[in-house]
Length: 224
Image (cartoon, rainbow, N blue to C red; front, side):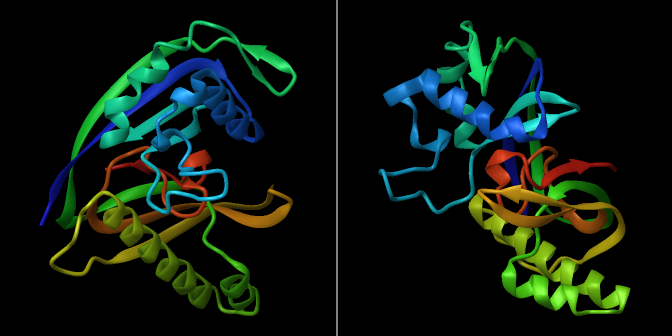
């Protein structure tokens, strides 16, 4: 059964680099201080976490800083928008965030009759276990199948995180791997993929899919 999901994307006119996304997140949290709702950082204590889909996500869209809010996240983003008049520090550079666009969207999330085409950027599908399986697989078809299984699981995690439970199965087919590269996160080397895929499933643009979705990985763009 389809469910209407609300998203709100705040796009700034400020250029940031990929490695500055986590610094952007830190600047937001610093500006809010102790007033920050748990959805801004997903920490419930100094060493405890909110183990759920992140409803406020920090991203780089077309080179610009952006915040993507999902469901309840959209209800509380005004808390930060009131705090963005002062410059922030991204590492060693001072930056002022000015809102360029605010894009509210409502998407009926669920099974579709016809497949929809998506692009997914900086997706991190491989952990230590499936990376070894992927690396030791020679056939391209088998590599794609490994990635498709992970992608289906990541999508199911997103659906569960926003309260969507399907009555039937969906199909996912990766049609192209446009880029893959190694990146470092917290001193761990990870393989990031840019892919195109089709699924008989309606999903909202700009949400994060998979690992580190809250800090710019696995950015989903709906094509058709």
